[in-house]
Length: 331
Image (cartoon, rainbow, N blue to C red; front, side, top):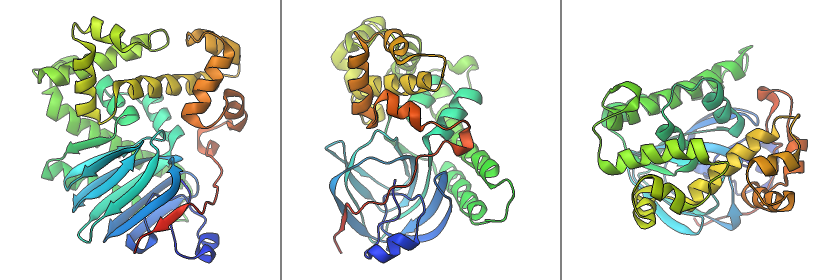
């Protein structure tokens, strides 16, 4: 993720901390644990253009309280207004980011391993929520009550992250991020789930299709990569499935499929008993070379390099900070 963009290289050397894609002048409150979890409050305007696409090393959640934020993500233009949440997974390439004078947002970012661990080991969440967080860009409208709850969650995180003397700072802030995801899941549940058992609900047809698509992906992603396969199972056309996914998640259905396959492959690579050749076969690639090209395209690392960079525990599984000089600010 790099550090907060600054005007002076000297400041970059002094502020070695994980950060979000925001200018330092607009950050009003901030707390962080190096290379692990970051949270901040943003107010004011800024406009940053990256000389090359920038892929966040950390998973970001942005709660927009006021104003707007415009971004170019994966070559497409997006605008998010007030009372929305934005979800930026680590596969999102950022080209440009702009927000106005009345912009106000709460932001948190964490190492991808934290999100994976929450979903893997402490997973009360329905598949459609997981797929929204892992593979979508958000953009959901938030009710005022939910907005206040989510902003308060991040505010508490900022306060906690600022306490550098807490003996179990990593553990407690892991818990705070888990609480944030739980509150977001509750918000989605009440919006689409209607409190029905096993996440069944009287929801709009498009929401039900997204839910069923998420369940089908979870069950078949290792073997099936065709949009047509999932559309046929859902008894709809490929065009209609693509339209629903794009509308609900703000990304293409092919992006969702590729992102989920990358996630599964990364999870398999964490198992030292599995060979890369075996993983390629399990993921239905034609050969190890094809798997390697796919994985590097979506992660920036070869499967071997990714495996070599893995640490033994969750709390030490953090990518090393790399300073960059690729941001241009338009003041």
